[in-house]
Picture (cartoon, rainbow, N blue to C red):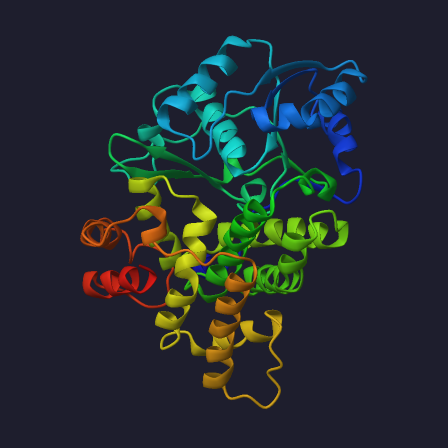
Length: 389
């Protein structure tokens, strides 16, 4: 009977809307916290976003310690520095992350290590015997990009530079206790970052939609995410101060993160993580290069599900057959990717033709461990990399 019971893991509370960031102090009080440790990055220090948050928190008599030494695509070493700093702040009773997915994932991983000990490899998803997470400090997450959905997911990821792999921890305890979605925090994102992170969010929504582990609960989240992103990503890229578009993207990213966290991602992420592990490429951009090819690859196994994406992507699907609507959905993703200026290939990202074989070998090890609707062998994976090359 247990296999028939649907589950949905989400943050305990989510605030979304203009000025939502001012609810951070309220969230801390509700969680019984008095001493906060804030993870962020130096870009947000420079923009003043951190100062505004800290001022709000301190005005409510909350003690605040700041760690801003995070880095894009966090490494084992970067997470280790963060964990040591958190451990040294002995009176901390709540962590806050203000930033994009890299900041949030750094905070999650540091929380695990500081509260439970060991190394990241002890907890690594897919390891021989991943160590359980006994306790964590409560976590308030304030995303400043619309992409990873990490504020709503059970995942935290990092790069192992020695093994040249991208790894992750998955555990329901890693979902934020409180998520705060304030679109005003995303208006300073450059167009290229907006485009890349937006395609990451769209990939989450689409892969959740076609996952073998999808349910009516995740389908509803993913469908709404596709619609929000499909109608607003172009506008967010070209008019970064459009708060309506930014709000759509931030909510779409959150919903997509919740959707894939409760179903799974698929082959796009498997391939992109292989590339990211070897070449440290921006995750959203790498997803963007691979999304349409993998959608086309999956159509033979998930024709109806891919066809249902068409309307959310702006296609008038009235009167179209399932095959026609599926082809139109793939074409819509290709057009969207081009419209927002992501025309790069793997070659442009520094990947050599000879590297494709190595990448295919790396991806083939995990390709069929996800919920992707169609199994892929090494030759098919290599063909997908060649298409994106």
